[in-house]
Image 1 (cartoon, rainbow, N blue to C red):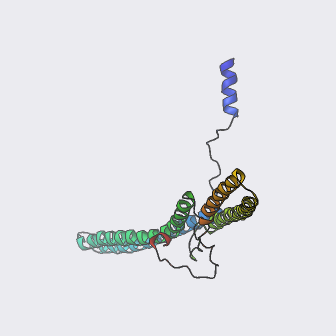
Image 2 (cartoon, rainbow, N blue to C red; image 1 turned 180 degrees about the vertical axis):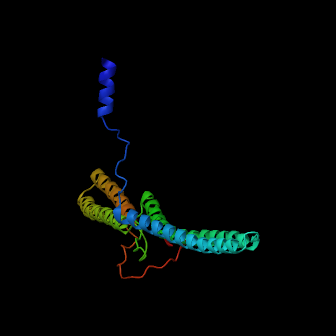
Image 3 (cartoon, rainbow, N blue to C red; image 1 turned 120 degrees about the vertical axis):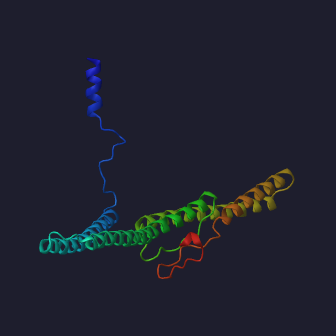
Length: 219
């Protein structure tokens, strides 16, 4: 009975690792799904038309002269198929490089920015190129970086105020209290300078500014 109850419980509980929603980014996924489908349809149509023409001509020649072996037509079919396969592979390869460049470019740029963030520095963000993908994700990423930068700027301003108060207390004190206040001022100033150093990079440029690939990571 326990086994039956356990099996019913297991069957009634959906697996957490099971993913039923295959369309998570409709604009991106449908765009490339349709492009690939159209490319396959176009290539298949052209290849079928060419081979049909060659085979139709071969059939007519054999009907006119059944005893004749048209070896040259067979060679034409083989040569056309090989040439078409080579051209198709070259075209699809070039198209794949173009498409993956639009995808890998933004990912490479954001990986570089994440590396800078991991080191405690805020990167100088730049707009993506006009035909790059993941623009919506990049916009969310930019807003997150701006939010963190604004929070860090508020922290620096708070430390500036704390440093001003600590220095004022050091001037107004004497003896051991002054030494404590001066030591506290030095620690606050060191922390303030460390945090301010992470804000040295400028904010993101306006979208109207043309983006150039001056370094490989930005391409």
